[in-house]
Length: 337
Image (cartoon, rainbow, N blue to C red; front, side, top):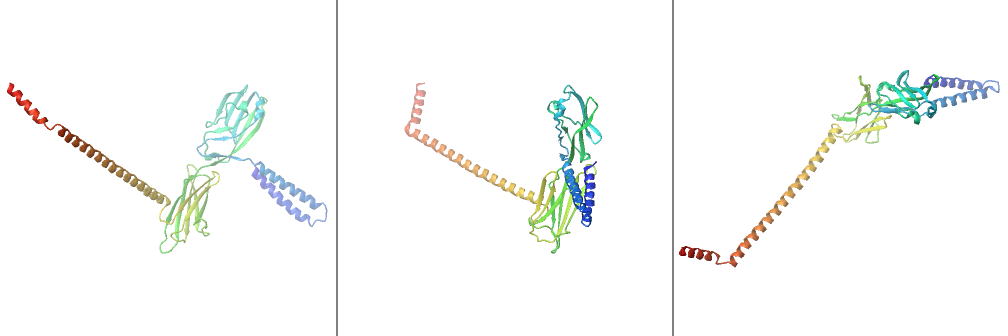
């Protein structure tokens, strides 16, 4: 029997016996009230016990592999056996073992178990990917021994989730002191998230000012969430929208700082301003470095030119008759000829 249905039945029984307790206070029999109290307390304890027996679900993220745990060391004593992992009544994996070795395996959607499961007792089922059709489905492991005995060894519930996109917050300023409109939009997540609004980081919006709609995508069953806020606030007020996905333990917030338009555009403008400032600084440094290097080269060139001119003048002072000697020598050679 489904545990949720069982808990409802037990709760109704508890209410019934609670009225019995009330009636027992008017009953002349001295033992009626203790008996009614005992039965009501026993049912309440049983209800709490059943609530604790409900299996914990394994969280699977859409599009990612997930492992459904099952440790059963008692199978180490078996030599030849067959196991089946079932999703409801459908067999998703059937594995045949002989002498603690896997000799045959048939699976649906590439589901697998460890190749040394018979040696370690770890028969966990690995699913390469999951989709929303398996949301809250129960997977069970059964063994078929040589005596054709079937028994459920493990049961695991599969809970699914998917991340939402970062919320996009848009703001439309009111005209002539009217109400300001805010639109918060996020896409592609599961299950339906919670949406929270805050004004100036601490103040919640007035009751009735928020309207949230969740639309399920037809092909994937993922959710698109859209939340509207209409509120009368000043232009410099800070408004934030938070998307909370509890199964994924994700909280994403987008904030409007009193400027018209989405925060994405504001962040883009701020990023462009920072980039242009940094680029201008780099270009300025490069120009200064180029000018300094050119001045350095000019100084070196002038120094070398001065050194060359000084060496030339010094040579002429040391040899003042060089040109006259060369002329006399040339003339005597012509006379001899």
